[in-house]
View 1 (cartoon, rainbow, N blue to C red):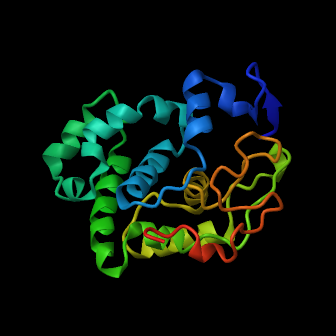
View 2: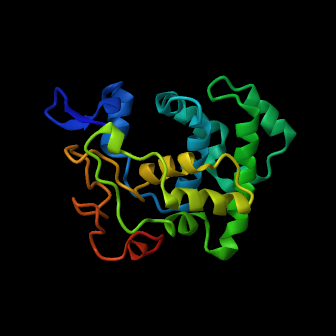
View 3: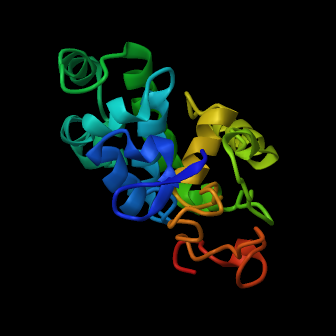
Length: 213
């Protein structure tokens, strides 16, 4: 994740320059807080599909995923049956993996069931750590954390699937719970939650970014 200077004079990790699509994603989305149910559900779903693949592959197919999965509306997906699953398996625009498609349906049902307990977004954000990593090179950027392990365990207990600790850490990076931008990246601190030294910017992070907070 070493940040390098590109032709526009800005510093980013090398992966962010692999394609214009990745650069746009890095510059505008990665690490920006997402605190609504549908947004968090979409990202959990896409991170699950990404497992074993490159994020570039998923990002290139994101519009097709959104169309097939009805805008990642949990209520719409929760009622899917075999006809909808079969149709998804025939859709060349997405990743056609039966286990991951079925996991998305199961996760939609689990997301709907969570509303009586505060909702998916609030649960995920309750695992925000007390500090964030301060990586200066690829070896220093973690791929898992105690919080991602605990979050994965909690979600699995509620019926979520394909939500392992590494996948959940990737989710936490993507939606701003942690900041693993290299210290010299122009996007370091883009979540607004963390100081340069990795401490919470406005006190306890548990109070910072919960939906409605």
